[in-house]
Structure formats: C-alpha cells, structure tokens
Image 1 (tube, one colour):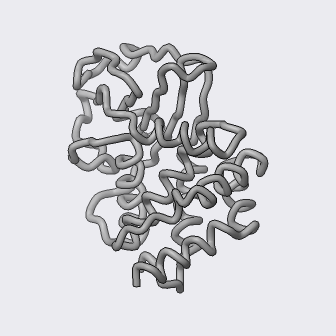
Image 2 (cartoon, rainbow, N blue to C red):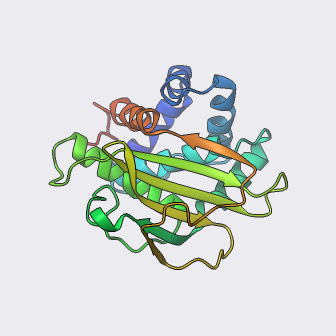
Length: 224
C-alpha cells in the first residue's frame, strides 16, 4: 500500500493541473511554483515514502512550501536551500499571556525542525477539517526569511491567529539567535534581521492544504 500511495502522490505532483491550482491557491505566479516542484520530483525528494498516508502527504506538503518559499531558480539550489530551511530549529515561542491555552493548532509537541512542525500542523488541519479532532481549527501563517542575499542565516516563523490577531508565534533559524525559549506578552520583542522572504497567509495556506487533501481523494494515498 505504501508504494501505491507514493505513486498516487507522484502522479498528482506531476500534473500541470496540480501546479496551476497551487499557484492559484497560494496567489503566486506559476513561474514560482512549477520549477520548485519539478526540482523536488527530479531529485527524488518528493514523494516521501512514509507508511502513514497523512504523515506522508504532510511531509510532501511541507517540502513543497519550503521549496517555493526559498525562491531559488536552479534545481540544485531549490533542493539545497529547501533542505536548509527544513532543518531550521525552534529558537523561541511567543505566547499571549491573556490566552496562553488558545493555540490548538500548535499541539504541545517537542519541536525538532521547521519542516517537521509544518508537516505536523498540516495533519492537525486535516483532522479538524474531517471532524476527527476535538480541538477547533485556528488559521496559521508561515514566513520564510533570510538575513542577506547570500542566505548566511535563514529564518522561519509560524503564526497562529484567533479572532484577527496573533496568539502564538514560533521562531526558527538556521543558527542560534540566543533568544529566551519562551517569551510572553511583548509581541514586538523579537525583530528578525531579515531583508527578504516569502509569506504564506492563512487563507491561501488553508486552500493549499485542502488541495492536497482533495488531490489524493479516491486514491491509495487518501486521508479518509
């Protein structure tokens, strides 16, 4: 079944229709979507060979977002930079002290990397969408950033929203930022020295995850 699931996801990612729809859902030009996905496919990065369908699709989705967010032109650069982004480690988590327990899309897991956390969040979203999670769904936003044009330091953030405002933020980087592990209350406390990047807003992200879910429906890679 794992091989059949893998092949079903490969066929999905190879289609022009899927890439066009990703561009539409994320509000980006197709020129920023098709080359990164093709580079991941050609390098054998996607589809991954995880046994669990939701876990596998979550990993593939995270890798696609990282490749798009890296904004690289050459296939080798796409793979290399997306791998660096995926390996970024958690530097700090900012919480609203007035509503510290509101962040349900961020389960209380021990963070291992930016990529792993993105993949886990996608599974939380799918569980909420399928009615298999007791927790409500809160929109998230993802940012991929870099310190300078050489990419000497890379950053990532995951923001969780509730009622129009940020409730929790996780900050990742490719090197240690020397931040406190937990920061409460002061949302302007952390100013990342970023000069550019890619922002995936809540509604486009939900559309992207919905596209992945619908794309494998009625195939061996189905989440249902």
